[in-house]
Image (cartoon, rainbow, N blue to C red; front, side, top):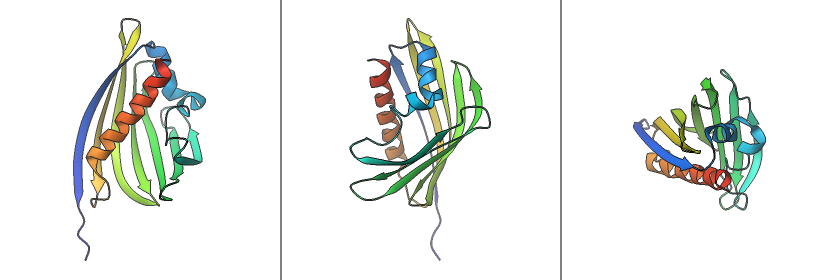
Length: 154
C-alpha cells in the first residue's frame, strides 16, 4: 500500500505598490487585467483556458502547459468573501496532469499606503503525498506578486 501523507504549511506575503487600492483590487477582479499578470510566463507557457466569475460563490480556473516538460497545471478557485477594494477570501486547488497536489485557503487585503497600496496575502495549504513543495508554492506566489507589481507600478 502506498503511504499517504499531508503536509500543512502557511505563509504571509506583503507588498507595497504605487497604484491605489482600487486599481490593485481591479487587477484581481477584471479578467482582461488579471490575464496580464496571472499565469505562466508567456514564453514558457501555453494557455489551455481561463475563466473568472469574480463574485462570492464564483469560480475561477487557469490551465496551461509548460513547453519545456509538457506538464499541464490547473488552478481552480472558489470565492467566499469579496469586499470591494478591501479584501478577497477564496480557496483553491492545484493539479498537475490531473492529479491533485494541494488545497489552500487564501486571503488578500488591500490597504491604502499613501497614494499606493499595501497588499497582504496569507495562505494556509494542505499538500498531498509530497507531490508539491510548500516552499515552491510560496516562491511561485512571490513571482506572481512581482508580476502584479510590474503591471501596477508601470
